[in-house]
Amino acid sequence: MRPDNLRFLLPSGRSLSDSTLRHLKAGGITVARSHERCYSADMWHERGHYDFSVESLPRQVFFAKPDQVVRMVYSGEYDAGITGFDMLHEIIGPKGSENHDWWTFEKIEICGSYQYGRNGGKQEIALFTKHGSGAADFQRRPTNSDRVASEYPNITRRLFEWWGRNPIVEPSVGCVETRVLSGDYLYGVTLVESGETLRANNFYYHSKLMDTYPVLIANKSALEEKCWLKDVLDNLDRTLKKSLNSKESN
Image (cartoon, rainbow, N blue to C red; front, side):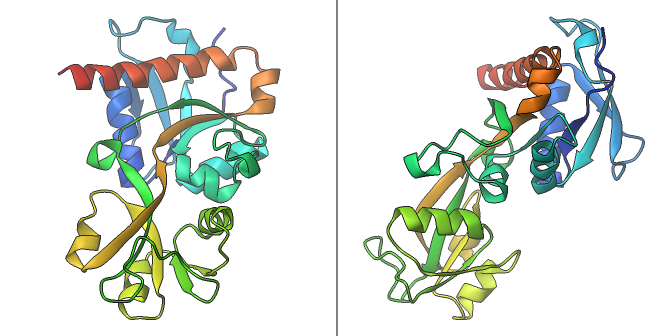
């Protein structure tokens, strides 16, 4: 039986969305939108490509920003979706953070992780500062009086707590580099892909806080209640991994 009542989310936004659709396409799965700004699409598998039942795929999918994918799967409004590992940590945080368990989350199960996206999927959340600021030293970590502008305030606070530090962390979306460059903040925390922006502005890369990559997630209650959901997600997981393995072999 085809799971017509599956509510599945794909990420919107060019970086994660384009790479996800590209790898699904390489695995034989087409996601067809009538317009690139449409928030729903049809999904089907191209004949001759699949090695599983076509009935085990969602017929329709929806799009949402990566942070909203986490929120809507967490609430149970949607069954599953693809988002970034960083969004899981920023929006809900790991359930076992006190034990440095980064993979266990309340109400959400990670069903697959992948290395794709910009810069070959190599992305990280990094701490940086200005050269010549006095903080451009790997041995010097932020003190309780330092101000940190962060695109990921929850992740930043949690990791500093593990380090035994409690600097002043303030949310800053889309303008972290400017605030550090102007001297308003001593440190910044941002998503780093190639590192080109940091180098162009003569920033000092201090340290990596965590890696991030696309993940396939599902609501734990939905997995328990819908017996067919695991098979659907296993099919999508195999498709993405098959596409990645084929790309590596070429």
